[in-house]
Image (cartoon, rainbow, N blue to C red):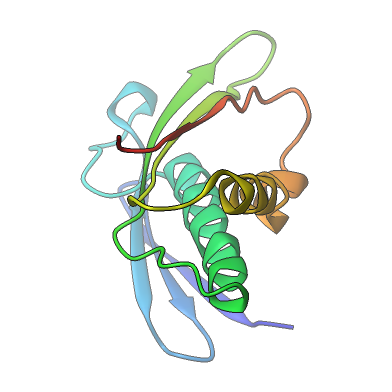
Length: 136
């Protein structure tokens, strides 16, 4: 179990504190939902958590199989929908992979990414297209 705390600071801004480390993250409502958009929105953090989780789980697999994953990165595009309720409708994920990963190891990494805990925790109504790009 991990404890976290959140304090509402006013003006649609919150300060989140990670209990074990004391690290802090600010959130702000997005401009299209009455906020200033001056920090990650709560739904931005959901998308960021997905990308971070995918890279982390891939990193675990890479360590086990001596795969150099250094420099891998994720770009995310989060799209909101407002039909019935405002919610995340789609998170497009593009993973840019480092060179020299053979096809068998690529498949292992890709499977790991798409089975990360955040990916498996998101509602099935959220579209999650994932694309892996490997350099020539």
